[in-house]
Image 1: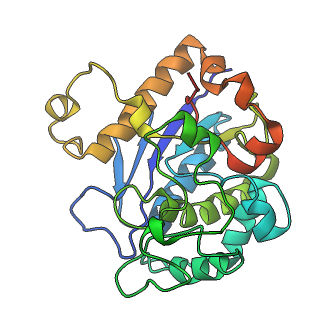
Image 2: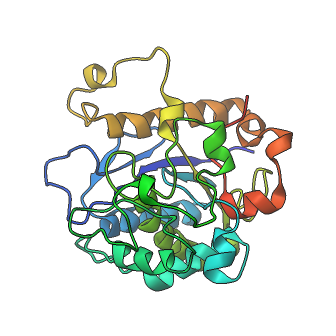
Image 3: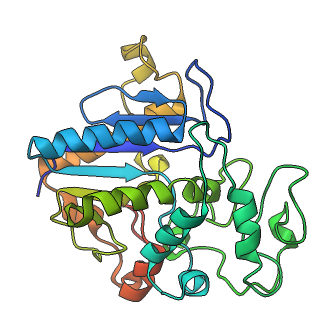
Length: 291
């Protein structure tokens, strides 16, 4: 099956709008065949995504869209937080509790202190700005103990450079991006219903046949070994910023797979890791396979 549009989204957990001048560690969105766009807030970015999806559906097109944050947590977290062992139950819970303003102001650290309080010991979440840390939310991962959760998802064991979803602050803090991204994805799911499939949390590892397929991506996996220098080829675009290059790389590589119809290779994972219950809780990165 082919997609008519492929979209890659590099997310951000900034608590203020990004600068007017495009900068790193902000939100960049690329559509296959186009140059990336820069977005100062999460609200503005999701409005842009919604407009693109609406136009695609109106044109009868199928869309694959990837977001670069974790879609799930290690086994057992969903049950402890929501009473359900389904990963999408966590999305719903976060949508009910995380408040994210149009200016990127948010309450993620306060919410996570309450979440950590549900567990024995200290943790599992960690990392926060100076002055926010306390016994409920330690600044360092080494201060946690006795919370009972695995440190990494199965896919993070398969991709060793991937960061743990528990990390909320400083370089590589994908955990905060997830907390401030999953509520938006839940809103998209509620809006598009059966027209939108979340792979693999609700589909298993089969390639979905929905109008919109939402996947987790890890742009560092898509770095080409040898490629045209985008910043030199397109000096008036945003390619002097790594985030912009990465979403373009994702779109280009997925577009190549799309044209060659080699998607089964991307959606496939090692049989020994294909535990349906585990994947329904933890999710997976599209294109990541275990050696």
